[in-house]
Image 1 (cartoon, rainbow, N blue to C red):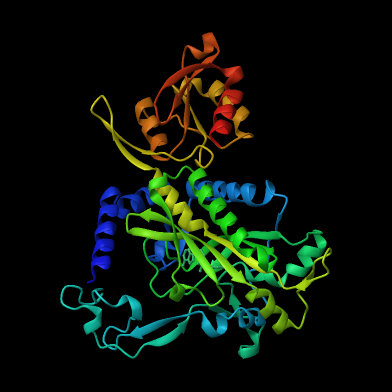
Image 2: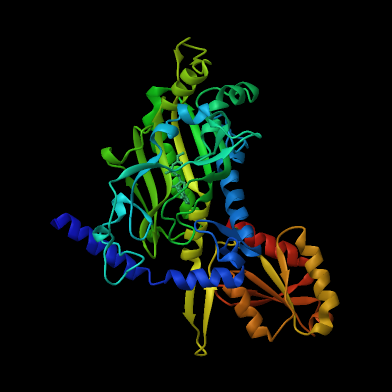
Length: 458
Ligand code: GAP
């Protein structure tokens, strides 16, 4: 190993020491508390597919809403769409996916498994893990394996009915560019954004939801004059890094990494990854790409439709350059779970697990806890009053300490206790998750009190 490579391996090792959370701990918390669990679990699961439970869907929806707010609602120069998952098959010829979206694979003649050629080094054979490294298995020559998931449309099954589940959400943005620009009366520079499912037949889905076969992307394609592409690339790089910091992720767990020339995708002229420090090392959660005019030119060529624009002032006709921001919603959700996880020793010698989610992302904003089941009626009335404003949970099972712990473990920022004094003084106790500080608050001002705190944090 060269000195550079050994320095970098040492740095990776140091980084992992800084991040002592074991993935198994997080995976079991996620299943036990209803964040994320294997899809079709009762049948033994299906590799690369995951279901989000009652808390997971809230967390993911909050993340998507935050992205939409920042990328679409708060900007004059970006509009949103929601396109079909299946596009005309020519789309994928134009995009280069039919020809080039593949991984080099090798098969083992003995255990009949398939591996990515670039991952066999150092990996153990799953059939004989102690005895044999994969490189020593009975391997075939490396072959290209297309990662798109196919399906058939209509009743007959032949090549003409083959369609693909989209491997990325952006292609419908390119094919719909003219329609959206004209209907929204937008002028270049402007962007089109969407959030949606994407599918890839990953050969080795791994690291929980990190590499899945079905996942969600939030992508924004920004169309600009070629002479402004560098300036917009810088702009979006900074905006997107700041977005991840604003999610409450500690800066020490984030970095950007420019792609080397030989790493660039076929369409990219430049690319920067936003990386997060997972327990399994630094990994990409988002890519910012300068795609040049590849997409619009190719779709123009394959569809025969003109996609160039005219600058109204100079009358110059040009094909816009695209700067893309593409973030994985599932990967970022996983990063949020990793970043939030915390085990703490308390002053009384007990310990607690607490998910320190940013309040704007926390699945439950407040939980109402009546001190006794006899107090259900007034406590339920508080829940009813709050629930049209934010997600509020109700828990009357077990002693109050255990109920606090349960809420800490799912990251609820506020617990509201209704006790026997509440009937007399018209107040409840609000306990804050991170500091565990408690404050007596009048019930009539509770909604505003909680809203102010949630708003202040977003
Ligand atoms: N349109 C460009 C594009 O799709 P990409 O780097 O292949 O670029 C963008 O994907 C983001 O999508 C990644 O940064 C990652 O967060 C997410 N992503 C890609 N493949 C994924 C997978 N198999 N499982 C989960 N997320 C994935």
